[in-house]
Amino acid sequence: MPPSDYRGLSLWHDTVGEELTPRPALAGDLDADVAIIGAGYTGLWTAYHLALADPGTRIVVIDKEIAGYGASGRNGGWCSALFPTSLRRMALDRGRAGAVRMQHLLNATVPEVGRVAAAEGIDCHFDQGGSLSAARNPAQLERIRAHVADYQAWGFGADDHRLLDAGEVHEIAAVDGALGGSWTPHCAAIHPARLVRGLARAVERRGVTIHEQTAATDVHSRHVVTRHGTIRADHIVLATEGYTATIAGRRRALAPVYSLMTATEPLPEEVWDQIGLRDRTTFADNRHLVIYGQRTRDGRIAFGGRGAPYHYASRVSPAYERDDRVHATLQRVLVDLFPVLRDVAFTHSWGGSLGVPRDWYPSVRHDRRTGLAFAGGYVGDGVATSALAGRTLAALIRDDDPDDLASLPWAGRTSRSWEPEPLRWLGVNAVTALMGAADRSEQRSGRPSRAAAAFWTAIGQ
Picture (cartoon, rainbow, N blue to C red):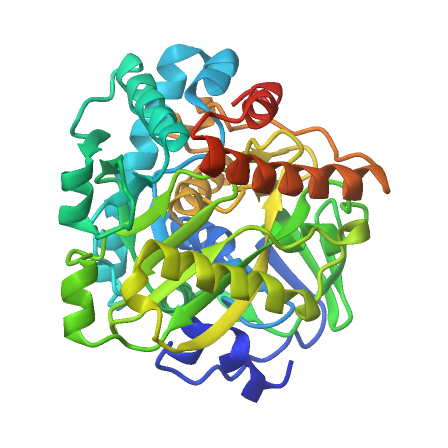
């Protein structure tokens, strides 16, 4: 993309507060200790922890566009301890203690992101006001109660997940029709592009080289091939998340699924007095077709959700980032949540792809024999998760793991590949349709959708 167009990628890029001029591309063949493909959260956190542990490590990061071009710069700004894989599923791999430890580490990673941002002078608008999940019909309320009870069964108390009645929900946010809900402190609202761009500068201060507008055309043991030259490195990290399918030979590794967002104009204080969200608590309801929102530091609501189609053969294109039908639906849903917004203007609409593994189970791995490493498959829950992934990858690459991160449930595993087309296209889009139908059924009847419950059980969640 031309540099002048990067600001148009999202609200976050438009308000990042810096010029988005690309760094120089790779200028020829290069030798390094570690080569990282993808200048998003995963790649930059990996570089950060490697450089922090050993400033002499030769680290080079490349990106097809600019740092923070992808999901790291466009997401909903939830730095949360959410993980797409259930504790029960993780316990099957590494036992109950391993699953619980994983969740505790994710919880601790949320404030750690804020601490590092402050230490590095990154003004990413970090406010840890927790996260609200509201129930607007009896089926959603039943799920929320079961969700909190499940956490309690794993040893997490009210300080981690707390049930709310309708009045307590309204004390946080005036969600229309809320019957109850839950709240967790383990989430912060952030400006995602400010975080990722700040991380890029932080690693450069530690000697890491970043080459932008440098696409990897082939990746194999100890070699990254680009049009500008070949990087030879002892370790190569694939940190491409929703763009993984564009790398040769990896089309079926992660399905690129689009999540779209919209944002209001800055709202006057009298509107905020009616909505709430004083602590910038992130918010959603408990529908199956995920939605997510936050109050931005400049007084907007940034709001997103699923519903965009998966595109045949795992295609990724800027043309898929704007869908008038889905954006209009998101705006209607937001006004339905907060009717006071019925007359406000929406100033930004955007989207981006996220990486979904076949079993909805993120992974972190490093093959010492080939030098190839990977982290990703966050299914949209990647802001804090990627920070823990980068820390884990750095430990695996250095073969120095005092915190025993290699024993975590997601370490060293590989999800099976997605089905070939057209089965992949049929399957992914059928799930999206199923979740939308389940939500409509639950809204009409108030009863939980058996079809949706069967799907979650089938994938081990």
